[in-house]
Amino acid sequence: MKKIENVRVRIAPSPTGFLHVGTARAALYNWIFARKHNGSFILRVEDTDLKRSSKEMIESILEGLRWLGLDWDEGPFFQSERLAIYRQYTERLLKDGKAYYCYCTPQELAERRESAKSEKRDVKYDRRCLGLIDNERKRFESENRGRALRFFIPEGETAFQDIIHGEIKKKNRDIEDFVIMKSDGTPTYNLAVVVDDHEMAVTHTIRGDDHISNTMKQVLLYNALSISAPRFAHLPLILGKDRSKLSKRHGAVSVSQYRDEGFLSDAMFNFLALLGWNPGDNREIMSREEILEQFSLERVSKTSAVFDQQKLEWMNGEYISKMDNEDVLKAVIPLLKGEGWIDEGAIEQKRTFLLHLVAALKPRMRKLTDFVKYSVYFFKDVDAYEPKGVKKHFAEKTLVLLEALIEKLEELTDFSKEHLEHVLREFAEKRNVKPAQVIHPVRLAVSGMTVGPGIFDILEILGKECVINRLTKAIKYIKVL
RNA sequence: GUCCCCAUCGUCUAACCGGUUAGGAUACCACUCUUUCAAGGUGGUGAAACGGGUUCAAAUCCCGUUGGGGACACCA
Image 1 (cartoon, protein in one colour):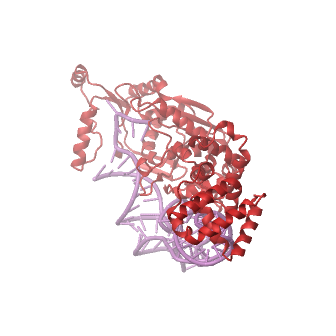
Image 2 (cartoon, rainbow, N blue to C red):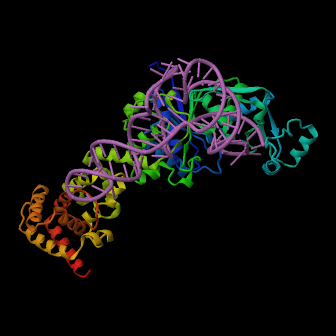
Image 3 (cartoon, rainbow, N blue to C red):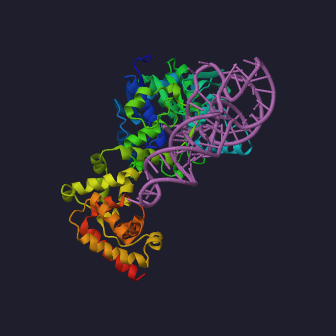
Protein backbone atom coordinates (compact mmCIF):
# COMPACT_ATOMS: atom_id res chain seq x y z
CA MET A 1 0.00 0.00 0.00
CA LYS A 2 1.48 3.28 -1.03
CA LYS A 3 1.54 6.00 1.58
CA ILE A 4 0.27 9.41 0.70
CA GLU A 5 2.42 11.94 2.46
CA ASN A 6 1.17 14.76 4.66
CA VAL A 7 -2.48 14.11 4.25
CA ARG A 8 -4.61 16.95 5.55
CA VAL A 9 -8.36 16.68 5.39
CA ARG A 10 -11.20 18.50 7.03
CA ILE A 11 -14.84 18.41 7.92
CA ALA A 12 -16.58 21.71 7.55
CA PRO A 13 -20.03 21.62 9.07
CA SER A 14 -22.20 24.69 9.13
CA PRO A 15 -23.87 25.22 12.47
CA THR A 16 -27.36 25.72 11.11
CA GLY A 17 -28.63 22.39 12.39
CA PHE A 18 -27.67 19.28 14.29
CA LEU A 19 -25.05 16.87 13.03
CA HIS A 20 -26.75 15.34 10.02
CA VAL A 21 -25.96 11.71 9.20
CA GLY A 22 -24.71 12.85 5.80
CA THR A 23 -22.25 15.22 7.40
CA ALA A 24 -21.36 12.56 9.91
CA ARG A 25 -20.59 10.09 7.14
CA ALA A 26 -18.43 12.65 5.35
CA ALA A 27 -16.66 13.36 8.63
CA LEU A 28 -16.16 9.65 9.12
CA TYR A 29 -14.55 9.13 5.73
CA ASN A 30 -12.31 12.14 6.23
CA TRP A 31 -11.32 10.91 9.65
CA ILE A 32 -10.61 7.40 8.43
CA PHE A 33 -8.59 8.74 5.55
CA ALA A 34 -6.55 10.97 7.85
CA ARG A 35 -5.91 8.23 10.40
CA LYS A 36 -5.06 5.69 7.76
CA HIS A 37 -2.42 7.91 6.20
CA ASN A 38 -1.17 9.34 9.43
CA GLY A 39 -2.47 12.73 8.43
CA SER A 40 -4.40 15.48 10.13
CA PHE A 41 -8.11 15.84 10.52
CA ILE A 42 -9.19 19.46 10.77
CA LEU A 43 -12.46 20.77 12.09
CA ARG A 44 -13.68 24.00 10.62
CA VAL A 45 -16.99 25.57 11.40
CA GLU A 46 -18.51 27.35 8.44
CA ASP A 47 -20.46 30.04 10.18
CA THR A 48 -20.25 32.93 7.76
CA ASP A 49 -24.00 33.10 7.66
CA LEU A 50 -24.33 34.76 11.01
CA LYS A 51 -28.09 34.93 10.77
CA ARG A 52 -28.52 31.19 10.70
CA SER A 53 -25.65 30.00 12.85
CA SER A 54 -25.96 29.35 16.54
CA LYS A 55 -23.80 28.41 19.49
CA GLU A 56 -26.05 25.53 20.51
CA MET A 57 -25.75 23.96 17.11
CA ILE A 58 -21.97 24.18 17.25
CA GLU A 59 -21.89 22.42 20.59
CA SER A 60 -24.29 19.78 19.40
CA ILE A 61 -22.23 19.09 16.29
CA LEU A 62 -19.01 18.75 18.25
CA GLU A 63 -20.77 16.44 20.66
CA GLY A 64 -21.97 14.28 17.79
CA LEU A 65 -18.48 14.01 16.36
CA ARG A 66 -17.06 13.09 19.74
CA TRP A 67 -19.72 10.48 20.28
CA LEU A 68 -18.77 8.82 17.01
CA GLY A 69 -15.16 8.87 18.11
CA LEU A 70 -14.08 11.28 15.41
CA ASP A 71 -11.44 13.26 17.20
CA TRP A 72 -9.88 16.17 15.36
CA ASP A 73 -6.27 17.30 15.37
CA GLU A 74 -6.77 20.96 14.59
CA GLY A 75 -9.53 23.41 15.25
CA PRO A 76 -12.31 24.06 15.60
CA PHE A 77 -11.62 27.05 13.43
CA PHE A 78 -14.39 29.53 12.87
CA GLN A 79 -14.80 31.28 9.58
CA SER A 80 -16.51 34.16 11.32
CA GLU A 81 -13.17 34.91 12.98
CA ARG A 82 -11.20 34.91 9.74
CA LEU A 83 -12.92 37.66 7.84
CA ALA A 84 -9.76 39.69 7.38
CA ILE A 85 -8.09 36.79 5.63
CA TYR A 86 -10.86 36.42 3.09
CA ARG A 87 -10.75 40.13 2.40
CA GLN A 88 -7.12 39.90 1.31
CA TYR A 89 -8.12 37.41 -1.34
CA THR A 90 -11.17 39.25 -2.57
CA GLU A 91 -9.13 42.42 -2.85
CA ARG A 92 -6.56 40.64 -4.91
CA LEU A 93 -9.25 39.39 -7.23
CA LEU A 94 -10.73 42.86 -7.50
CA LYS A 95 -7.37 44.45 -8.20
CA ASP A 96 -6.60 41.88 -10.88
CA GLY A 97 -9.89 42.65 -12.59
CA LYS A 98 -11.19 39.18 -11.87
CA ALA A 99 -14.06 40.40 -9.74
CA TYR A 100 -16.42 43.33 -9.90
CA TYR A 101 -18.98 45.06 -7.75
CA CYS A 102 -22.64 44.41 -8.24
CA TYR A 103 -25.24 46.85 -6.98
CA CYS A 104 -28.30 44.76 -7.67
CA THR A 105 -30.28 44.27 -4.49
CA PRO A 106 -31.19 40.80 -3.33
CA GLN A 107 -34.84 41.62 -3.95
CA GLU A 108 -34.17 42.69 -7.54
CA LEU A 109 -32.20 39.54 -8.15
CA ALA A 110 -34.90 37.39 -6.67
CA GLU A 111 -37.52 39.03 -8.86
CA ARG A 112 -35.45 38.51 -11.98
CA ARG A 113 -34.87 34.90 -11.07
CA GLU A 114 -38.53 34.45 -10.50
CA SER A 115 -39.57 35.83 -13.86
CA ALA A 116 -36.82 33.93 -15.65
CA LYS A 117 -38.17 30.76 -14.13
CA SER A 118 -41.77 31.44 -15.03
CA GLU A 119 -40.75 32.31 -18.59
CA LYS A 120 -38.62 29.18 -18.64
CA ARG A 121 -35.51 31.20 -19.33
CA ASP A 122 -32.10 30.43 -17.96
CA VAL A 123 -31.74 31.90 -14.49
CA LYS A 124 -28.13 33.06 -14.80
CA TYR A 125 -27.01 36.50 -13.64
CA ASP A 126 -26.96 38.80 -16.65
CA ARG A 127 -23.76 40.71 -15.80
CA ARG A 128 -25.56 44.01 -15.88
CA CYS A 129 -23.19 45.52 -13.31
CA LEU A 130 -20.07 44.45 -15.15
CA GLY A 131 -19.89 47.39 -17.51
CA LEU A 132 -21.25 50.04 -15.22
CA ILE A 133 -20.15 53.52 -16.23
CA ASP A 134 -19.05 56.03 -13.60
CA ASN A 135 -22.33 57.92 -13.54
CA GLU A 136 -24.37 54.86 -12.81
CA ARG A 137 -21.98 53.72 -10.18
CA LYS A 138 -22.11 57.12 -8.50
CA ARG A 139 -25.86 57.08 -8.59
CA PHE A 140 -26.04 53.67 -6.97
CA GLU A 141 -23.55 54.74 -4.32
CA SER A 142 -25.53 57.85 -3.55
CA GLU A 143 -28.67 55.77 -3.28
CA ASN A 144 -26.84 53.94 -0.54
CA ARG A 145 -27.24 50.63 -2.25
CA GLY A 146 -25.16 47.82 -0.89
CA ARG A 147 -22.61 46.29 -3.17
CA ALA A 148 -21.61 42.67 -3.40
CA LEU A 149 -18.50 41.42 -5.08
CA ARG A 150 -18.94 39.05 -7.99
CA PHE A 151 -16.37 36.78 -9.50
CA PHE A 152 -15.94 37.17 -13.25
CA ILE A 153 -16.15 33.79 -14.98
CA PRO A 154 -13.69 33.63 -17.87
CA GLU A 155 -14.47 31.85 -21.10
CA GLY A 156 -13.52 28.27 -21.62
CA GLU A 157 -14.08 25.00 -19.89
CA THR A 158 -13.33 23.84 -16.38
CA ALA A 159 -12.47 20.32 -15.39
CA PHE A 160 -11.10 18.41 -12.45
CA GLN A 161 -10.13 14.85 -11.71
CA ASP A 162 -12.36 13.35 -9.04
CA ILE A 163 -11.02 10.36 -7.11
CA ILE A 164 -14.40 8.68 -7.13
CA HIS A 165 -15.97 9.90 -10.35
CA GLY A 166 -13.04 10.41 -12.67
CA GLU A 167 -12.99 13.50 -14.83
CA ILE A 168 -15.83 15.97 -14.43
CA LYS A 169 -16.04 18.97 -16.71
CA LYS A 170 -18.30 21.83 -17.47
CA LYS A 171 -18.42 24.73 -19.86
CA ASN A 172 -17.76 28.03 -18.16
CA ARG A 173 -20.69 29.65 -19.90
CA ASP A 174 -22.92 27.43 -17.79
CA ILE A 175 -21.57 29.02 -14.64
CA GLU A 176 -22.72 32.45 -13.54
CA ASP A 177 -20.69 35.26 -12.07
CA PHE A 178 -21.34 34.25 -8.50
CA VAL A 179 -21.05 36.47 -5.47
CA ILE A 180 -17.87 35.99 -3.47
CA MET A 181 -18.41 38.69 -0.90
CA LYS A 182 -21.75 39.80 0.43
CA SER A 183 -22.61 43.46 0.88
CA ASP A 184 -21.97 43.12 4.61
CA GLY A 185 -18.38 42.21 3.90
CA THR A 186 -18.63 38.52 4.78
CA PRO A 187 -17.42 36.02 2.22
CA THR A 188 -19.71 33.51 0.62
CA TYR A 189 -19.20 29.80 0.95
CA ASN A 190 -17.30 29.20 -2.27
CA LEU A 191 -14.72 31.87 -1.59
CA ALA A 192 -14.26 30.96 2.06
CA VAL A 193 -13.81 27.28 1.27
CA VAL A 194 -11.13 27.97 -1.30
CA VAL A 195 -9.23 30.36 0.92
CA ASP A 196 -9.45 28.11 3.96
CA ASP A 197 -8.58 24.90 2.20
CA HIS A 198 -5.57 26.66 0.77
CA GLU A 199 -4.53 28.41 3.99
CA MET A 200 -4.97 25.20 5.95
CA ALA A 201 -3.02 23.26 3.35
CA VAL A 202 -5.82 20.77 2.84
CA THR A 203 -4.69 18.02 0.49
CA HIS A 204 -7.97 16.18 -0.08
CA THR A 205 -11.42 17.62 -0.09
CA ILE A 206 -13.82 14.80 0.66
CA ARG A 207 -17.46 15.84 0.71
CA GLY A 208 -20.91 15.08 -0.67
CA ASP A 209 -21.84 14.78 -4.30
CA ASP A 210 -24.12 17.77 -3.99
CA HIS A 211 -21.00 19.94 -4.03
CA ILE A 212 -19.89 19.01 -7.52
CA SER A 213 -21.30 22.15 -9.05
CA ASN A 214 -19.62 24.22 -6.33
CA THR A 215 -16.35 22.49 -7.06
CA MET A 216 -16.43 23.90 -10.57
CA LYS A 217 -16.67 27.40 -9.17
CA GLN A 218 -13.97 26.69 -6.66
CA VAL A 219 -11.60 25.35 -9.28
CA LEU A 220 -12.10 28.58 -11.17
CA LEU A 221 -11.19 30.52 -8.04
CA TYR A 222 -8.09 28.43 -7.44
CA ASN A 223 -7.02 29.23 -10.98
CA ALA A 224 -7.78 32.93 -10.70
CA LEU A 225 -5.83 33.10 -7.46
CA SER A 226 -2.96 31.03 -8.91
CA ILE A 227 -3.04 28.63 -6.01
CA SER A 228 -3.20 24.89 -6.33
CA ALA A 229 -6.37 22.99 -5.62
CA PRO A 230 -6.58 19.93 -3.38
CA ARG A 231 -7.60 16.56 -4.74
CA PHE A 232 -11.36 16.09 -4.71
CA ALA A 233 -13.47 13.09 -3.78
CA HIS A 234 -17.22 13.45 -4.04
CA LEU A 235 -19.17 11.00 -1.96
CA PRO A 236 -22.51 9.63 -3.09
CA LEU A 237 -25.46 11.16 -1.31
CA ILE A 238 -27.44 9.48 1.43
CA LEU A 239 -31.09 9.27 0.44
CA GLY A 240 -34.35 8.79 2.28
CA LYS A 241 -36.89 6.08 1.55
CA ASP A 242 -38.32 8.08 -1.35
CA ARG A 243 -34.85 8.42 -2.85
CA SER A 244 -34.54 12.13 -2.35
CA LYS A 245 -31.73 13.67 -0.33
CA LEU A 246 -32.08 12.63 3.29
CA SER A 247 -33.76 15.38 5.25
CA LYS A 248 -35.97 16.00 8.25
CA ARG A 249 -38.99 14.87 6.26
CA HIS A 250 -37.58 11.36 6.43
CA GLY A 251 -37.55 11.24 10.21
CA ALA A 252 -34.42 10.99 12.27
CA VAL A 253 -31.43 12.58 10.56
CA SER A 254 -29.26 13.80 13.38
CA VAL A 255 -26.76 11.50 14.99
CA SER A 256 -27.66 12.68 18.47
CA GLN A 257 -31.17 11.47 17.82
CA TYR A 258 -29.86 8.01 16.98
CA ARG A 259 -27.75 8.07 20.09
CA ASP A 260 -30.79 8.95 22.17
CA GLU A 261 -32.81 6.20 20.56
CA GLY A 262 -30.31 3.67 21.81
CA PHE A 263 -27.89 3.13 18.98
CA LEU A 264 -24.27 2.36 19.78
CA SER A 265 -21.42 4.48 18.57
CA ASP A 266 -19.57 1.48 17.16
CA ALA A 267 -22.63 0.27 15.28
CA MET A 268 -23.32 3.70 13.86
CA PHE A 269 -19.70 4.02 12.80
CA ASN A 270 -19.80 0.63 11.11
CA PHE A 271 -23.10 1.29 9.40
CA LEU A 272 -22.16 4.72 8.11
CA ALA A 273 -18.82 3.44 6.86
CA LEU A 274 -20.62 0.79 4.85
CA LEU A 275 -23.00 3.25 3.30
CA GLY A 276 -21.16 3.80 0.04
CA TRP A 277 -18.10 1.76 0.79
CA ASN A 278 -17.32 -1.93 1.30
CA PRO A 279 -14.17 -3.89 1.90
CA GLY A 280 -14.57 -6.02 -1.23
CA ASP A 281 -15.26 -9.25 0.58
CA ASN A 282 -18.44 -10.20 2.37
CA ARG A 283 -17.65 -8.69 5.73
CA GLU A 284 -20.21 -6.36 7.23
CA ILE A 285 -19.68 -6.31 10.95
CA MET A 286 -16.32 -4.63 11.17
CA SER A 287 -14.42 -2.96 13.96
CA ARG A 288 -12.96 0.49 13.56
CA GLU A 289 -9.54 -1.08 13.19
CA GLU A 290 -10.65 -3.38 10.41
CA ILE A 291 -12.35 -0.55 8.58
CA LEU A 292 -9.29 1.64 8.94
CA GLU A 293 -7.14 -1.16 7.64
CA GLN A 294 -9.27 -1.80 4.57
CA PHE A 295 -10.58 1.63 3.62
CA SER A 296 -9.77 3.33 0.36
CA LEU A 297 -11.46 6.18 -1.44
CA GLU A 298 -11.14 4.26 -4.68
CA ARG A 299 -13.59 1.69 -3.38
CA VAL A 300 -16.25 4.26 -2.59
CA SER A 301 -19.21 3.76 -4.88
CA LYS A 302 -20.69 6.38 -7.15
CA THR A 303 -24.30 5.56 -6.56
CA SER A 304 -26.29 7.23 -3.86
CA ALA A 305 -27.54 5.03 -1.05
CA VAL A 306 -30.84 4.85 0.77
CA PHE A 307 -30.49 5.04 4.54
CA ASP A 308 -32.08 1.80 5.68
CA GLN A 309 -32.92 2.09 9.34
CA GLN A 310 -33.94 -1.54 9.59
CA LYS A 311 -30.48 -2.61 8.65
CA LEU A 312 -28.98 -0.20 11.13
CA GLU A 313 -31.16 -1.78 13.79
CA TRP A 314 -30.02 -5.23 12.85
CA MET A 315 -26.42 -4.15 13.00
CA ASN A 316 -26.93 -2.44 16.33
CA GLY A 317 -28.48 -5.65 17.63
CA GLU A 318 -25.42 -7.57 16.54
CA TYR A 319 -23.24 -5.19 18.50
CA ILE A 320 -25.43 -5.42 21.55
CA SER A 321 -25.42 -9.18 21.63
CA LYS A 322 -21.65 -9.26 21.33
CA MET A 323 -21.04 -6.76 24.11
CA ASP A 324 -20.06 -7.93 27.59
CA ASN A 325 -22.82 -7.82 30.13
CA GLU A 326 -20.88 -5.29 32.15
CA ASP A 327 -20.72 -2.89 29.25
CA VAL A 328 -24.34 -3.35 28.35
CA LEU A 329 -25.29 -2.67 31.93
CA LYS A 330 -23.21 0.47 31.98
CA ALA A 331 -25.05 1.70 28.91
CA VAL A 332 -28.47 0.72 30.18
CA ILE A 333 -28.25 2.07 33.72
CA PRO A 334 -28.81 5.70 32.73
CA LEU A 335 -31.97 4.66 30.93
CA LEU A 336 -33.26 2.74 33.92
CA LYS A 337 -32.50 5.70 36.13
CA GLY A 338 -34.33 7.89 33.68
CA GLU A 339 -37.40 5.77 34.18
CA GLY A 340 -37.00 6.08 37.92
CA TRP A 341 -36.70 2.33 38.29
CA ILE A 342 -33.42 2.37 40.16
CA ASP A 343 -31.37 4.98 41.89
CA GLU A 344 -27.67 5.42 42.20
CA GLY A 345 -27.47 3.95 45.70
CA ALA A 346 -29.21 0.73 44.77
CA ILE A 347 -27.05 -0.10 41.79
CA GLU A 348 -24.24 -1.85 43.66
CA GLN A 349 -26.45 -4.10 45.74
CA LYS A 350 -28.63 -4.96 42.76
CA ARG A 351 -25.67 -5.61 40.53
CA THR A 352 -26.08 -9.37 40.26
CA PHE A 353 -29.74 -9.00 39.49
CA LEU A 354 -29.07 -6.35 36.85
CA LEU A 355 -26.35 -8.36 35.17
CA HIS A 356 -28.67 -11.34 35.03
CA LEU A 357 -31.30 -9.23 33.51
CA VAL A 358 -29.21 -7.73 30.72
CA ALA A 359 -27.73 -11.11 29.96
CA ALA A 360 -31.17 -12.62 29.52
CA LEU A 361 -32.48 -9.79 27.40
CA LYS A 362 -29.37 -9.09 25.36
CA PRO A 363 -29.72 -11.51 22.43
CA ARG A 364 -32.97 -10.04 21.23
CA MET A 365 -32.48 -6.35 21.84
CA ARG A 366 -31.79 -4.13 18.86
CA LYS A 367 -31.58 -0.82 20.62
CA LEU A 368 -30.56 0.13 24.12
CA THR A 369 -34.00 1.59 24.62
CA ASP A 370 -35.46 -1.87 24.01
CA PHE A 371 -34.07 -2.87 27.39
CA VAL A 372 -36.43 -0.42 29.00
CA LYS A 373 -39.36 -1.56 26.93
CA TYR A 374 -38.88 -5.24 27.70
CA SER A 375 -37.82 -5.10 31.29
CA VAL A 376 -40.63 -3.15 32.94
CA TYR A 377 -41.88 -6.19 34.79
CA PHE A 378 -38.55 -6.67 36.51
CA PHE A 379 -38.97 -3.32 38.16
CA LYS A 380 -42.68 -2.76 38.47
CA ASP A 381 -45.64 -4.91 39.24
CA VAL A 382 -47.62 -6.28 36.34
CA ASP A 383 -50.82 -4.33 36.10
CA ALA A 384 -51.98 -5.29 32.64
CA TYR A 385 -51.80 -8.38 30.51
CA GLU A 386 -51.38 -8.35 26.77
CA PRO A 387 -54.93 -8.90 25.45
CA LYS A 388 -53.79 -11.31 22.76
CA GLY A 389 -52.10 -13.41 25.38
CA VAL A 390 -55.10 -13.34 27.70
CA LYS A 391 -57.25 -14.77 24.96
CA LYS A 392 -54.78 -17.50 24.21
CA HIS A 393 -53.39 -18.48 27.58
CA PHE A 394 -55.78 -17.44 30.35
CA ALA A 395 -58.57 -19.98 30.31
CA GLU A 396 -60.63 -21.74 32.97
CA LYS A 397 -58.45 -24.78 32.96
CA THR A 398 -55.28 -22.80 33.48
CA LEU A 399 -56.67 -21.77 36.84
CA VAL A 400 -56.30 -25.22 38.29
CA LEU A 401 -52.88 -25.57 36.82
CA LEU A 402 -51.63 -22.31 38.22
CA GLU A 403 -53.08 -23.03 41.63
CA ALA A 404 -51.36 -26.39 41.74
CA LEU A 405 -48.16 -24.84 40.47
CA ILE A 406 -48.10 -22.30 43.25
CA GLU A 407 -48.28 -25.07 45.81
CA LYS A 408 -45.43 -26.79 44.10
CA LEU A 409 -43.30 -23.67 43.94
CA GLU A 410 -43.87 -22.89 47.57
CA GLU A 411 -42.06 -26.04 48.55
CA LEU A 412 -38.94 -25.03 46.64
CA THR A 413 -35.79 -23.86 48.28
CA ASP A 414 -33.69 -23.98 45.11
CA PHE A 415 -35.03 -21.36 42.73
CA SER A 416 -32.32 -21.63 40.07
CA LYS A 417 -33.39 -21.78 36.47
CA GLU A 418 -32.02 -25.28 36.04
CA HIS A 419 -33.99 -26.59 38.95
CA LEU A 420 -37.10 -24.66 37.98
CA GLU A 421 -37.01 -26.17 34.53
CA HIS A 422 -36.78 -29.61 35.98
CA VAL A 423 -39.61 -29.01 38.43
CA LEU A 424 -41.88 -27.46 35.90
CA ARG A 425 -41.46 -30.17 33.31
CA GLU A 426 -42.05 -32.82 35.86
CA PHE A 427 -45.13 -30.96 37.00
CA ALA A 428 -46.49 -30.81 33.49
CA GLU A 429 -45.83 -34.43 32.91
CA LYS A 430 -47.67 -35.49 36.08
CA ARG A 431 -50.65 -33.42 35.13
CA ASN A 432 -50.51 -34.82 31.65
CA VAL A 433 -50.17 -31.51 29.85
CA LYS A 434 -47.50 -30.18 27.56
CA PRO A 435 -44.93 -27.95 29.20
CA ALA A 436 -46.02 -25.15 26.89
CA GLN A 437 -49.48 -25.17 28.45
CA VAL A 438 -47.95 -24.27 31.76
CA ILE A 439 -45.22 -22.04 30.50
CA HIS A 440 -47.31 -19.66 28.44
CA PRO A 441 -49.76 -18.72 31.19
CA VAL A 442 -46.90 -18.40 33.63
CA ARG A 443 -45.03 -16.08 31.32
CA LEU A 444 -48.07 -13.92 30.86
CA ALA A 445 -48.79 -13.92 34.59
CA VAL A 446 -45.33 -12.88 35.67
CA SER A 447 -44.47 -10.49 32.84
CA GLY A 448 -47.74 -9.38 31.29
CA MET A 449 -46.13 -10.07 27.93
CA THR A 450 -46.09 -12.95 25.50
CA VAL A 451 -42.53 -12.48 24.39
CA GLY A 452 -39.29 -12.15 26.24
CA PRO A 453 -36.30 -14.13 27.40
CA GLY A 454 -36.51 -17.79 28.40
CA ILE A 455 -39.14 -18.27 31.07
CA PHE A 456 -36.79 -19.96 33.52
CA ASP A 457 -34.46 -17.01 33.33
CA ILE A 458 -37.35 -14.74 34.11
CA LEU A 459 -38.51 -16.79 37.07
CA GLU A 460 -35.07 -17.05 38.53
CA ILE A 461 -34.45 -13.34 38.21
CA LEU A 462 -37.81 -12.40 39.71
CA GLY A 463 -37.39 -14.77 42.63
CA LYS A 464 -39.76 -17.04 44.44
CA GLU A 465 -41.79 -14.55 46.39
CA CYS A 466 -42.45 -12.29 43.47
CA VAL A 467 -43.37 -15.17 41.18
CA ILE A 468 -45.87 -16.55 43.63
CA ASN A 469 -47.43 -13.15 44.20
CA ARG A 470 -47.86 -12.58 40.54
CA LEU A 471 -49.31 -16.01 39.92
CA THR A 472 -51.79 -15.39 42.69
CA LYS A 473 -52.71 -12.06 41.22
CA ALA A 474 -53.19 -13.63 37.81
CA ILE A 475 -55.49 -16.24 39.26
CA LYS A 476 -57.70 -13.53 40.69
CA TYR A 477 -57.70 -11.84 37.34
CA ILE A 478 -58.71 -14.99 35.49
CA LYS A 479 -61.51 -15.66 37.91
CA VAL A 480 -63.26 -12.43 37.10
CA LEU A 481 -62.78 -12.80 33.37
C1' G B 1 -35.33 26.52 -18.45
C1' U B 2 -29.77 25.28 -17.94
C1' C B 3 -25.90 22.27 -16.24
C1' C B 4 -23.82 18.08 -13.57
C1' C B 5 -23.93 13.12 -11.50
C1' C B 6 -25.84 8.19 -11.37
C1' A B 7 -28.22 3.29 -13.07
C1' U B 8 -27.27 -5.11 -10.38
C1' C B 9 -32.66 -8.35 -5.85
C1' G B 10 -37.54 -3.79 -1.94
C1' U B 11 -32.79 -1.84 0.54
C1' C B 12 -27.04 -1.90 1.16
C1' U B 13 -23.82 -4.11 -2.11
C1' A B 14 -19.89 -8.14 -4.62
C1' A B 15 -17.94 -10.09 -8.99
C1' C B 16 -9.76 -6.87 -9.92
C1' C B 17 -8.31 -5.96 -16.49
C1' G B 18 -15.44 -8.88 -20.91
C1' G B 19 -16.39 -15.74 -20.25
C1' U B 20 -20.23 -16.48 -13.23
C1' U B 21 -26.09 -21.52 -12.24
C1' A B 22 -25.03 -13.08 -11.21
C1' G B 23 -22.47 -13.97 -4.75
C1' G B 24 -23.33 -11.89 0.32
C1' A B 25 -26.12 -8.94 3.94
C1' U B 26 -30.77 -6.87 5.35
C1' A B 27 -35.94 -7.16 4.82
C1' C B 28 -39.72 -10.66 3.64
C1' C B 29 -41.65 -15.81 3.53
C1' A B 30 -41.39 -20.97 4.87
C1' C B 31 -39.60 -24.82 7.70
C1' U B 32 -37.08 -26.26 12.15
C1' C B 33 -35.62 -26.19 17.36
C1' U B 34 -37.92 -24.79 21.55
C1' U B 35 -40.98 -22.46 26.06
C1' U B 36 -42.57 -17.40 23.58
C1' C B 37 -40.06 -14.73 19.34
C1' A B 38 -38.70 -10.05 18.14
C1' A B 39 -33.56 -15.28 19.66
C1' G B 40 -30.91 -19.73 17.26
C1' G B 41 -30.63 -23.16 12.90
C1' U B 42 -31.97 -24.48 7.72
C1' G B 43 -34.02 -23.17 3.21
C1' G B 44 -36.73 -20.00 -0.30
C1' U B 45 -38.83 -15.80 -3.21
C1' G B 46 -36.22 -11.79 -5.36
C1' A B 47 -31.90 -8.00 -9.73
C1' A B 48 -28.61 -6.50 -14.77
C1' A B 49 -34.13 0.01 -17.06
C1' C B 50 -34.54 -0.05 -22.58
C1' G B 51 -32.43 0.13 -27.56
C1' G B 52 -28.33 0.01 -30.58
C1' G B 53 -23.33 -1.04 -31.45
C1' U B 54 -17.91 -3.29 -30.54
C1' U B 55 -16.60 -8.58 -29.74
C1' C B 56 -16.23 -15.52 -30.79
C1' A B 57 -18.30 -13.73 -26.07
C1' A B 58 -21.16 -7.79 -22.65
C1' A B 59 -23.99 -6.91 -16.06
C1' U B 60 -18.97 -5.50 -17.39
C1' C B 61 -16.62 -1.32 -23.08
C1' C B 62 -19.01 2.78 -26.46
C1' C B 63 -23.40 5.61 -28.07
C1' G B 64 -28.44 6.88 -27.54
C1' U B 65 -33.17 6.76 -24.93
C1' U B 66 -35.60 6.48 -20.43
C1' G B 67 -35.59 6.93 -15.33
C1' G B 68 -33.74 8.83 -10.73
C1' G B 69 -30.95 12.32 -8.08
C1' G B 70 -28.24 16.86 -7.37
C1' A B 71 -27.01 21.98 -8.35
C1' C B 72 -28.44 26.63 -10.50
C1' A B 73 -29.05 32.44 -3.37
C1' C B 74 -25.66 38.63 -0.96
C1' C B 75 -27.31 29.62 2.47
C1' A B 76 -23.53 26.39 3.39
